[in-house]
Amino acid sequence: MDHNLLIQSDNIKALNYLLTNNELQGKIDLVYIDPPYATGGNFTITNGRATTISNSKKGGIAYTDTLKGTDFIEFLRERLILIHKLLSEQGSIYLHIDYKIGHYVKIMMDEVFGIENFRNDITRIKCNPKNFDRIGYGNIKDLILFYSKTSNPIWNEPRKKYSEKDLETLFPKKNKNGRSYTTVPIHAPGETENGKSCQPFKGILPPTGRHWRTNAETMEQWDKEGLIEWSSTGNPRKIIYADERKGMRIQDIWEYKDPPYPQYPTEKNADMLDLIIKTSSNENSIVMDCFCGSGTTSKAAQLNDRQWIAIDQSDIAIKTTKNKIDKIKNNLFLPKRNYKFVNLENKIIQ
Image 1 (cartoon, one colour):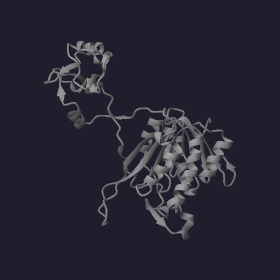
Image 2 (tube, rainbow, N blue to C red):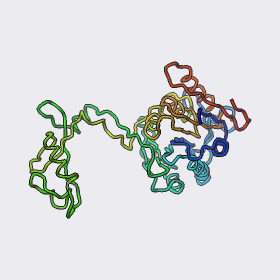
Image 3 (spheres, rainbow, N blue to C red):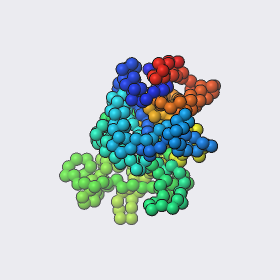
Image 4 (spheres, rainbow, N blue to C red):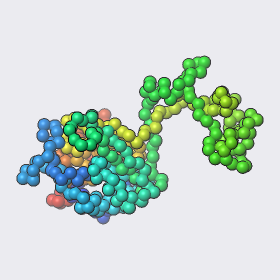
C-alpha cells in the first residue's frame, strides 16, 4: 500500500474489502479502536460537548451506540476476527472500552487473540474527579485492552523524563562530584550449585538462597570503574547514575484526559495516540482505526510518518477526519502522504 486510505462504510464490509480487494492480510502492524461502549444511545456534538439525541433526529447523529449485552459482544467479535487476519505477525491491537462492558470484552478477546498474547489492561484517567450523587465511587477512568498477535510484536520502549521529585525519590544519593545515583542488589533469588553465578566475588559468595545476577569477571570490571558500593552489611551493590538513564518506563496507568471541547463525541487525547503509535509501530507501518470517529489516530499516524487506514460509516466522522488530515497536508512543515477516499456504500473512489 503506497497511500493512506479513508473508507466510508459499515466497518465489517470495509474490513472484508481490505482483505479481498487490497490484499492486506497480515500487513497491518497496529490497530487502535474506540468502539461504542454499549450505552444504548445516539450521540452528536452540541456546543463542543457530546450529547445524547433521540432516534427521531438521525440526520444529526455522529455515531450510534444501541447494541447491548451479548449482541454487542458478538458485534465486536465479528470485527475482531477480521482484524486478527489483517494484523501482521508483529502486530498489536489496543481496544478502548469502558468499565461496564470491558471485562466481558476481555474474555472474548482472549479467545480471538489468545490469552498468552494479552499484554496489558491499561487504566486511562479520562477526566477530573466528579461529585455526582450516586451509590458507588466516582468514575474517572476507562480501560484499554492491549494484545499482540504473536509473542514478538513491535515494541519501541516508551519512556518519560524524570521529574525533580522522581530524581529525589529514585536517585537519593550523590557522589563527590554531585551526580545523583542509587544502588541495586547484584544478587537475585534462587540458589545455583555450579556455574559462574555462584563463584566468589572479592572472596564472598552470594547470600544463602540467592545467586549473582552476573559473573564475577563483570563485577570485577564494575569495581574497577567505581560502580560497586558496599552496603552496611557488607553486600556489594551496583551504582546506577540518574544521568545515564533514558527516563522512567511508562506504567499501566495513563492520565490522558479527553479534550474539553471535542470535534466529535468520542474524540480522544492526541498525545495518547502519539504514544501508542510510537511504541507499537515503526515508520511506514500501516496503522488502522476502523471506528475512526474524529480521525485522531490517522492524524497521529501521519505526523509520525506511518501509513494509515481509517474507517467509519458516519458522515460527520468522515467530514471531521478529512478536515484534520487536510490541515496536515496544507502545512509545509509536516509529513506529506496523500490519501484515497472510498465510499463503499455509494461506490465512490476519490
